[in-house]
Length: 240
Ligand code: PGA
Image (cartoon, rainbow, N blue to C red; front, top):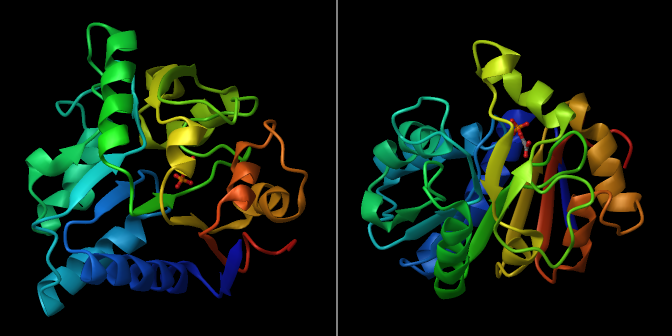
């Protein structure tokens, strides 16, 4: 795993932007694996700014997102489909019909997982952007998720519900379940970039870099990937 340690959040986002632009310039119809959360917001703002200033086009790109809350769809401003539209898609020229995410409102959840896995088989990510949970989760693959997992439904860990409650009016509003790409879907990406900032991520980053590769800390599987880059700020990387 390549490690890029930077001073702060802005530099982390800038380094990530360089890698994304390189992928898109070399392959205009690249499949972008995207993530939600606070971590990639700076990257998305920089992609939007670059699109505006330099005209980098995403018109031929496809996007696949990691995860979505069960029960939420675009009509909820807490859904991840809404997050992506507001924070990235409306600010670049990607076509909405080329953007994909699990349907949080699917009537048959198992069928939805099957549909999304088939889609991911067709749309191998040229690059996958990841954040990391304070407990070492990636997407909503919580500790204990099998390394060979594909898209599935998860019961969210209490720590994740607590971490994410800041984005809801109250902790009771945080959904208890989510759809998530599995670890094997993530590892299938040609290139992975994992971003982390802030001291809340220091434990997870230390485990990712120095811990035993084990299902109890899902992110450790990334050390088995041939092209994975960790970009972290000083606080997240303080123990590595
Ligand atoms: P965050 O979430 O970017 O909001 O910190 C990361 C994650 O839980 O994967």
